[in-house]
Amino acid sequence: MSVTERYENAKEVYEKWGVNVEGALEQLQNVPISIHCWQGDDVSGFEVNQQELSGGIDVTGNYPGKAKTPEQLRSDLEKALSLIPGKHRVNLHMIYAETNGEVVERDQLEPKHFENWVNWAKENGLGLDFNPTLFAHPKADDGLTLSHPNKEVRDYWIRHCIASRKIAAYFGKELGTPALTNIWIPDGYKDIPSDRLTPRQRLKDSLDEIFKVEIDEKYNIDAVESKLFGIGSEAYVVGSHEFYLGYALKNNKLCLLDTGHYHPTEVVSNKISAMLLYSDQLALHVSRPVRWDSDHVVILDDELKEIGMEIVRNGALDKVRIGLDFFDASINRVAAWTIGTRNMIKSLLYAMLQPNQHLKQLQEEGNFTERLALMEEFKTYPFGAIWDYYCEKMGVPVQETWLEEVNAYEKEVLSKR
Ligand SMILES: C[C@H](O)[C@H](O)[C@@H](O)C(=O)CO
Ligand SMILES: [Mn+2]
Image 1: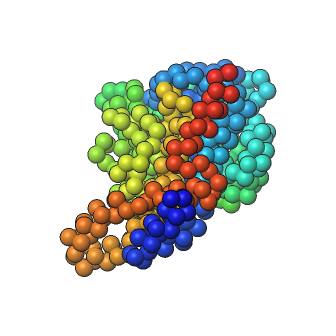
Image 2 (image 1 turned 90 degrees about the horizontal axis):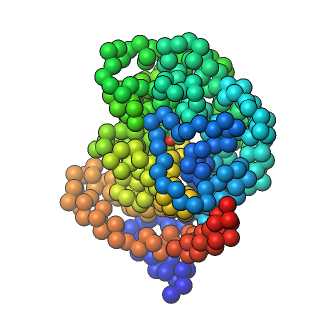
Image 3 (image 1 turned 135 degrees about the vertical axis):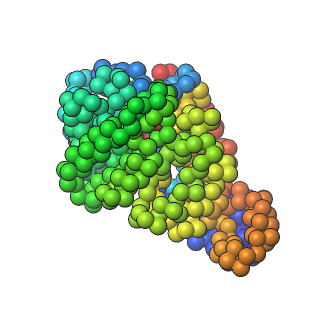
């Protein structure tokens, strides 16, 4: 049976429950996923004086073929994007600036250092998002940045974040779609602090300084990303969830929820509806923590499906800015992007194919038996046939055939690096 024939059969099965399959595929095409560039080079970046990765995050593995230049990274991203259905965004960090061999301090970086990225994004019809980089730098060696007791250090990172927002606004202006600038800092303590308040007060003041510089939201939108713990900040993280939740609500900023940044049994899917009652928008870093914030490649597990459902059934596709954040150096990096991003999109399609209105009604009526029965039965509905058709329609490889392209790319390009 052809992909289309399988699709037609599957469509009928879903339509019996009033699911609008064609409408779902139409809608799905317009959902951008912000794909993080740092999976392609193990969060190395292109600074002239490269420092070891720090800030309590880590990349393990040494699979050959890592991108070592901006051209290589862009080429690898193009390959991955050609295997992922839809039009998406690319998320950069400040360490991906191109300075032509010149050492430029991070607080002095300017839009011109990202011109190549912008031109490339234009050529490929992509939006860009951004992150200041407050790690892997001598001024972050003690694990403190915006909350540092030393004002000079704080001021340096404040200038860096302001520079980042300006660069992001340049992306937004040039590309006609606002960039998200997400501030994540590693600040915290390995052991039990004797004072939790003072660093948080300093972080609050630093953020106020950063956001004092007004930037049109037409071009740049600000987000703040919390964390529970990192390597070396096990006992205390200054920018905790409660800290940023309060800050974002009070200052009209977006909260960015990273799925690896919470207690192991705490799930981001359960936070989306609660937060959207108080905030117009929020942002995600979808990742996969395995025992810690390990940033494994995203798989189509129950939590990913639940995240997709919370976004779709609450009509929040234009309220949740979906970004990815994983970095696995033990497998082919182009495959990592492809697997993780395709899974994120699959979870949205899976959610769109549920009889959401009916299930909601059952809950309202207190019919929990039928609610559970249907939710379980739908797990084995012919979702794969709809997904395959979507891939074919969008001109990307169906099922695992994308692997052949990755293997060929590895042979022809990656293995020669
Ligand atoms: C590269 C980092 O993963 C990223 O900037 C940050 O979002 C994070 O999640 C740190 O744990
Ligand atoms: Mn993150």
